[in-house]
Length: 596
Ligand SMILES: *[C@@H]1O[C@H](CO)[C@@H](O)[C@H](O)[C@H]1NC(C)=O
Ligand SMILES: *[C@@H]1O[C@H](CO)[C@@H](O)[C@H](O)[C@H]1NC(C)=O
Ligand SMILES: *[C@@H]1O[C@H](CO)[C@@H](O)[C@H](O)[C@H]1NC(C)=O
Image: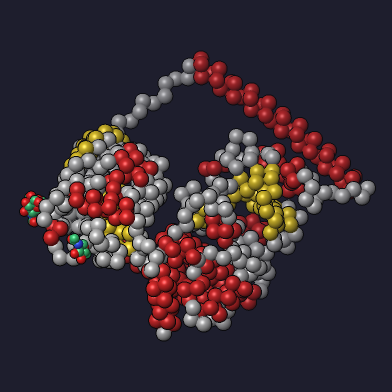
């Protein structure tokens, strides 16, 4: 019922907007040229074919064209199995500003793929399989900024494959049954869901070190070598005996090491002295300068002040096995410049850059009443459970007064900043929002499942705690840092429920684009009231409406969000994750199916 009314609401919006202009005349003209070159034959005599400049691609429903919900811009062009025997005019088709999907699978197209394919900046799906394309794949294809799936199998492409390591959005690459030669370039294998380069003429080692793709993905390239292939790569020669030169280098390292150790010792001694002086100062009533003040230098001593006092500091800092901080020492943290970047309910956050290391984030929690053993057990337990969408802990330190948690710094910032910050032209489209929601939901569901018996919920989920990795995948930070009384199972149950509630609020933020105050109850109340008045469309972020996001799936996600913020009967995270994952699958299907 709700749904029909909201679709009605949407229709009103549609009628209001459909008086507006659709694609510009020059875009329409470009599309006509594109088709003329694609189909020199007779397909154009098909009734209602369209593709002429006296009609409109959206309102006249040209064959193979799908527009956004408002009928304003072309989003998909799917022309499959039409015996098209011309050439692919990239220059023309890339004039369509909002083109997301282009499929020309199963035709008879010839010629090269032109470098200006990279002008299709919003393109996510490029399907060209089963044609007669030939020549090199242009390097610029790896610069398509939004591309997720490239399928060019069963053609006659030749030459080297471009370097795809800079393409961070790619999920599928199918290029089997072509005539590619040369070495296999790097891809972001960790992120790829599908990969196939079988039956080409590639040579040299397979760079995939993840082992996610089996021999079938590489078969039929007689000169390709690797662990899983019939041909193994030649082993490099073992190191020769150490020479005099090596000896000089190693003794150099040794001396350097000694100098560093002496320096560290001197610094610790100095710090200790300073600390004692500080204590004296405080006794004399000097303000220790906790409020604002000069942030940098203050912040530095601030998070380290109480930690320096007891001897054997290093022994109480536990560095977990992490490739990012090989051999990090507590002293390195103390010495490094620190910058206060946040102050939350449960503590402060510092960005620290140890000499020569990667930037880190130190979360400092004061007065958490938890025994050292319980704290340690908790941190070890969280560390044992690894999920790709949960930020791993790098190290932790515990003293009576404070706990320090160390993470790798994520330079892409948080979901909060992406949604509400100055967006410097970055588009955060519906597909990405849905996919982010799905990743976060499954990470949270996974953690809940694993940590149920340990009574460790996240405890402080919000959009500023959802960080973005280098590939813009989300990861949950600060898992399990909320001080709760573990002896009270009632409280634990409610905190697991508050995670679900907090996740619901994050969904509302994604859908409405509105920032959240306090615990999000204000936003939840507003959304519920608007939905009750049956003006559902009103709640959605204008950017999503303009983009033409599927209303059906936005409403679907909204229903999940409202369930999560329903305090009387909150669902389990597992249930929530499954529902969002199926919405995401529907979305992906709709993007690729040929049916408009
Ligand atoms: C495909 O098109 C070519 C030339 O345009 C024509 O000769 C051929 O008969 C067509 N084949 C089919 C199956 O329509
Ligand atoms: C242009 O395409 C429209 C939609 O298919 C069709 O109704 C119209 O007759 C076509 N015009 C010309 C001149 O072919
Ligand atoms: C391609 O063209 C040839 C002859 O021109 C035709 O026999 C074949 O069916 C066409 N292929 C497709 C997929 O339409």
